[in-house]
Length: 560
Image (cartoon, rainbow, N blue to C red; front, side, top):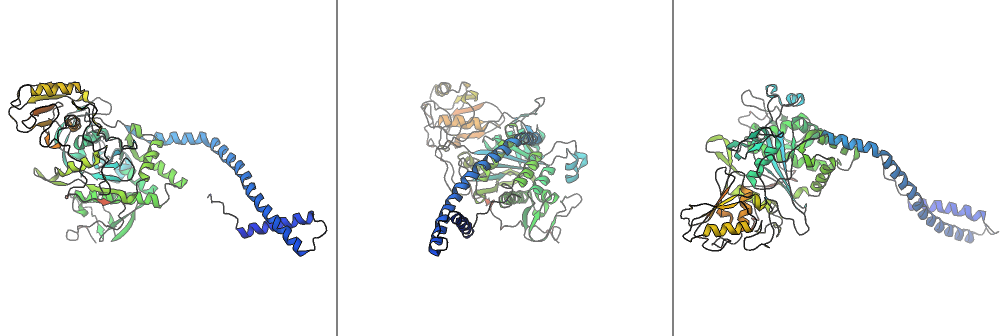
């Protein structure tokens, strides 16, 4: 173990200097060593001299020590490089987005910083003996895993705050078309599909594509972990503290489920298979929403554990953590480098735990199936808008002025409009413009202005009927396209509507836009980015170590 060198106490230092001074005085004495006053003066002078020599001596030994350390580092570079390559070789890497969906990027803040969006995925894959041993279901070993845990980690541009937003696995969503990692298979767009099935449609890159389609946000990276990975990570940090409000026993009941985890009331440290069981519990919490809350609690505790246990500063613990992390994670290709992962950890380390918000999107029971959920609108969209404008979800702070600016592409009448969320390039956005007013040539005028602004795929079409309000319709997975076009035309969010799966946007000009090539209707003023979460959403802090999960006893079935 390496210890910090302890400084020599002043008293000891003075004593050593005095002894040296006495010796020196004796050797150069001129005949008056027996005079006490002279001897004391000589000792004091020698002491001062000794202390000066001690300081200059320190500078002398620092230099060779530095050279020795440098030589040691250089000598170890070969093995360090091999270990670096070994860690990189542990990663499973894939394409970040395998769909055609494109998300909007938040504009840089005044310091040139941009936020990070990272999709975290937990899979129930049984594709290895270790995963079969932990999760059971050997018959499913040939089945691709389901994405049973999905949460978006948003790290603010200035790294002052972060948010983790979950979508429960039982939520029904529309999925964009996607392709397999090897490009040999294409999965068509589907409507009303359970979100955990996105992983079956080509892998984690298709889960990313689904989230881009749902949120309209650009997602920078993904990180996916399986059963065995959860166990390795929990063991690497020495376990994670979790809490239940009463004795809990998530009994394994045939035909119903259960993990078998048994914990006493209060706080327990879970590691290994217990950590996996905690993340998979559903029945003892009463719903899939409870499971998401328990997962948030676990991740918040893991973050606190990493900081408090010294795992990020102790070389031995850090190596163990790096080994566990790289063996456990599947990541997108740009992130499959230990230095990139370290830099990401450094970004996250800068965020105070008390400024990390955790929440689940608001959901309702699916009217088609009471065992499934659907996201509530417009409350869920409000969350995505807050992330796009980089507004802290904990209510502390305001959106960045640049990030919440209304223009995302050159305006047909204002090419120098301020930059804001950066989405797909204008020349990739296809749109058909129709005239729903009584004013002739309205569609042609707007279409020509769009072409001049870079929207080269803009065309006109007959029809449009008679509309009171302007409407921009986009297909599944095309929200980012619609946002770019709407920003260029200064259309309000209320003018956007999702319908069908067409790749071409449809703009019908209404009577509220009678003239000009940018919208000037009653709602033309840019809608400000929301500054607070909707009342249906309750956010918690990752630093909350006081709350406990509430067990739903169900007549004693899940308690003891």
